[in-house]
Length: 192
Ligand SMILES: C[S@@+](CC[C@H](N)C(=O)[O-])C[C@H]1O[C@@H](n2cnc3c(N)ncnc32)[C@H](O)[C@@H]1O
Ligand SMILES: [Zn+2]
Image (cartoon, rainbow, N blue to C red; front, side, top):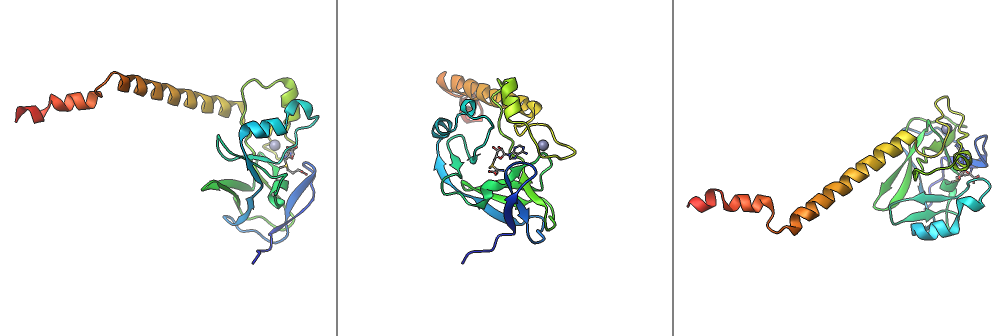
């Protein structure tokens, strides 16, 4: 049995087509799954090359560091949901599947959107900034459909700290007996 969608697809003032509520939507409602072909990041990169695109336009959703969903193949209506810097929906990943939920009550006629939060690589050119310019029109629009630079810095610093901690742990383990074990052998057990 298929469930009727709470939205329809039509022209959007933001970009191309968009998804618009056709009945009142309640906060927390699960609206649709983001479906499509599951591919690797290298395959996605080979399929869609930013440099050769005049305007950035893809139906890709990055699920993990290994998997991307390409909704241009086998995708459903979820692929038309545009980005907003002040979104009324959010995405959640459950066991590798991506779902779109309402962040608040949404009246009939309102366009649905979520924060794409495209990850920056840190070496974006002025041309990239232009290509990813946000047209969401929100009062709080941040100007880009990529994550804010501050978020990129925070994320990459946290990732670097995690890598350094792992490296220290590996170095510690390769020295032989872990400290905690050698301490235990010098502890109460010996006094018996
Ligand atoms: C998944 S599609 C969304 C549907 C798209 N409007 C369409 O008609 O195919 C993602 C693309 O829509 C455009 N887009 C979505 N939200 C946007 C926004 N806030 N500002 C500018 N372009 C946006 C970008 O070209 C992006 O690559
Ligand atoms: Zn915006």
